[in-house]
Image (tube, rainbow, N blue to C red):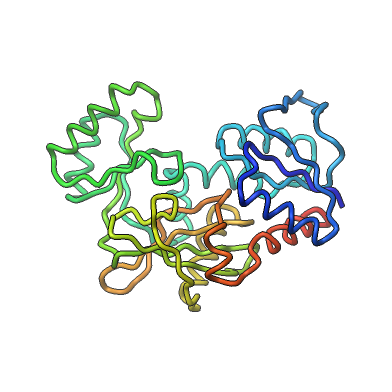
Length: 282
């Protein structure tokens, strides 16, 4: 068994995955995404592998690599189709709607005027996010129209075409935490709470991780959210509404888990490696 690990940086997570593969006698070929190039029918830098585990922090780099690997007939975790949807918040929200996964009210607009109208429709406070990106970068909680006009002006000045896509979401008044769950295949294997005094509770932004008791309701919603974007190895981000109901606002297809193994006691990297091996043998 030869597993290709596509990466940009060997972070703690990738090192944990390498150790998990070694423990299972899986040979790993490390594939540095920055040093790869692809022709339509072959990749000279790609050694013979049975499956590729994608762990690249660059969404665009990962997306193109996965599409080439698909063309070459190499199974990947996750697939190109999953990365395409899960890496774009607007496409993720559409997938949730198509599969009846509860998610915050969302409007996508393409001009400053329509963005302001969308904010009026959803109501303040609201949340504006870039359609791609992670670690809660460039998120904004918009309290009123004056803040909205300022944020929209800044986005317009930045100039990149992604800043002309206005992804606007209902603000959920969660109880000082959100829930992150980990889905591998058809099973929710673990979950954590991420608590913070700030409305952004990501652990990358200082949120405190604690073990989550994964109820049947949490597991069901997590698996449904993962399946909505195509399944595989997925982290689902859930929020608790004031009435106690759950909503899923996004998923991550190349998740971090360094802060989750300890609190949960679950061998997350081992489960990922075992799932990748199973995909190679299908």
